[in-house]
Length: 213
Image: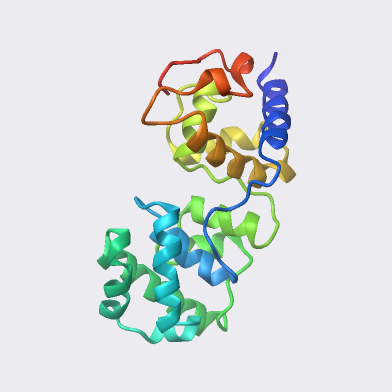
């Protein structure tokens, strides 16, 4: 089986296993997802979802966050860790959105990358989930799984993994596949324990069962 064939079969099986997989960060507007994904660095999505509720009670829109002080933001987002740097990035990002884009999130990958605190993972998440554009989000789950399954060979750098997957994954499947990797990585192909290969829908495709990736 070629990597291309294996990739399509992985997509098919994960679609059947997790038909409703979606972003696990709560948001109603694009700017809220930008805030949440910055807070999610080295923090669980579940905690981020709790913290942003308090953040948006005090700062309900782009303008109010842009005009807030870093200290005010940090006081609320501190439970997510790295409070000072995250508060600085969030305020700077919202300030640019307010002053340069009228409070809107730009629908352009390179423009997203230019925003403070936004890397390729965050930009791809916005492009896929908000704008419905082709996107591949190479988070830790994605990188671990594609190495274990054998879609890539020993590649750990997120951008290199992303570039490799663009050659294998149909553009319309990338965003959903990466969400399904998150679900599968949390439930079955875990990082901190041996993967639960006996319950894995990809077991015979993988060939690396029980091997830490």
